[in-house]
Amino acid sequence: MVRGQLSARGLEELLGHWRSAGPAYEALADVIRLLVLEGRISADVRLPAERELATRLGVSRTTVTAAYRHLREAGFVQSTQGSGTSTTLPTGQPPAAGDERGAGLLDFTRASLPATRLLHEAVEQAMSGLPAHTGGPGYDTIGMPELRAAIADRYAERGLPTTPDQIIVTTGAQSAIALVARALVARGDRAYAEGPSYPNAYDAITAAGARLVTSPVTVEDGWDIEALETAFRRTSPTMAYVMPEFHNPTSRTMPLEQRVRLLHVAARMGTVVVADETTAELDIDGGDSPPPIAALADRAAAHVVLIGSASKLAWGGLRIGWIRAAGDLLSRVAVGRAATDLGTPILEQLVVARLLRSVPEIRDERRVQLTERRAALWDAVGELLPSWTLPPAVHGGLTAWIGIGAPASSQLVLAARARGLLATAGPRFGIDGAFERQLRMPFTAEPDDIRRAVEILAECWPVVNRFDAEAIPSVSSMA
Ligand SMILES: Cc1ncc(COP(=O)(O)O)c(C=O)c1O
Image (cartoon, rainbow, N blue to C red; front, side, top):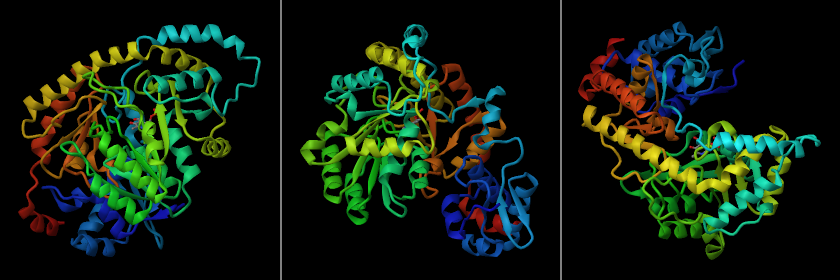
């Protein structure tokens, strides 16, 4: 069953700088393979006709024919008489290699720490509180009063007075993003997201029917606020998905003056600002923690929705997130939720209600861990890959957005995969195949594993970094 069609132009955008020093057909097949593995091209999508793609990419048709053959042999596409070539997943290989994770591979595709050491005690306390709740049906589409109260109190501690009826508990922040996007966006609407940004948010927002517009955030300069304002003025986005604190992947925090400008332009254009604060509590160096951006909303008459999560502070395995919004939007979210999800598990909510009472302690624990792990990444990259550019200042969050100095991120990730390291290539964080010169490395693994991961990258780098622009014409005509 073919579920969609990718135009030659669409594929060209996704491919970005796909060429490498090897034969062109191999480079083309490699990058399409990575796009399928990372879910950037879904299964059952028809690829462009060979002739059309060859013209678009400026290569010979035999190059495209050979690339498609290569992909067919590896099980990533199938060709049927009359319906062209469409993507498939090789049997037994889920995207992003879920099966491979247990097999001793280093997984650097997720930026997540192990559970807080307070988890055990919180689970025990939650277990003793559970019998008071087991007499009911257990379906909880809004969130338990004690957890909503704990979330509201945490906002108040951070400088944003909040009542429990402004909160809905969700199955992680991911589900919160999807629910909010579905409640806000109509098919064909524009939605804003930073470039780069958290890729699963791009996917949730486009799945809700939006077309994405973007403006840059860089490790050196943070938000290009003029470009953001221009994007808002030109496109009047229905919603804007932003990460004002420890933005993933750059780890930058938006300064106060830019927050005010963002809210003013949003208010003017009727845009709802959806701020994802999943990593907001993870400051490593103990600098100023600004209050949530919603604390400024009244000043600008802007509508701000906050999304939070227990995943990065406490543990991803709890699968608890939440939405803070005005009552009418929360009602729409609650009504829309039943189509995909009938509520959040009770025991986990009780656990998080307890953990949220110990946030300062958990933050201290995370600070110690992240200081050590950040140093491990910086030391290893500085020593083994000195030509790479580490971000000048990462004071919090979980990730380094590293400049690798050549448009070879996808090729690097493919080469690393063959040596047992799973990482996510730069273009996964963009919407149009950009960021081939960047690699996102989380610093959440044990220091030894971080060192090993960088060693693998350093082994692969000389092989993939033979990119030579002058060699391309002769290379592409080879196949
Ligand atoms: C910015 C951001 N938002 C949301 C999520 C998803 O979080 P959760 O585990 O709560 O679904 C992540 C996880 O990586 C993230 O980095």
